Image (cartoon, rainbow, N blue to C red; front, side, top):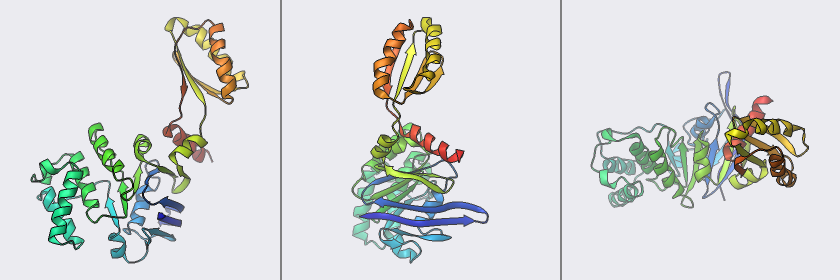
Length: 313
């Protein structure tokens, strides 16, 4: 099933094309990472998908509901965590979640049960009677995630959910998101590639309001794999190492060589030839190696390559 679908979605503010013909499809029950540099149009997309903004052109459906239709119907099917969530800070987490439950029309018994479940899920039970005003940024993000789940949404939309958190806070929030896989569809916008690499099944890359690519993360890594080797020599061998590295670009199996001090990254065209030739050539050049390893491409490598290609057009 498809949880989110858009066709030619556009949003224009004056002369600025914030979103330019977005067409994508998000499978139900997955965690979708919506990647892009700052200003790419990620937040605009989420505002359109939540019904908080109207598209200039195009169509979209979230949990089967037309995003240009009745906003109340859409609101009942989704959860939303903005980049900077706001709270009634004089309330406790339990009081705030109860308040959100009231807005969704939950009964007193349902609110009590759901509040207890969400406080446990987000690890806020020990501070359930503290005022939100004294919460750290990480605690507020966890509470924001809890409020977005009160109505048991089919689709959860998260705008930069971990961008301003310290490493410990980011780890907590990402673990919570990972635990939602299969319970609902998570659409997570971010510019932090390691977060997407850690938790997302599928990735969409946006740049200047246009979708560059959409694919499952494993397919993306396989499709854009560029075999490479990292080598680092002992300092006493640096001169011989540099001479050897500078001779590599003329060989048919080499795509590129990047030198940095006593290290080199060799990106190759022919992996078999590289494995056969690389080490014997290093030995013949009289180089003593400290490190030699095959490099696995990261999502960051692919992102920079694709966005760089778009910028060059």
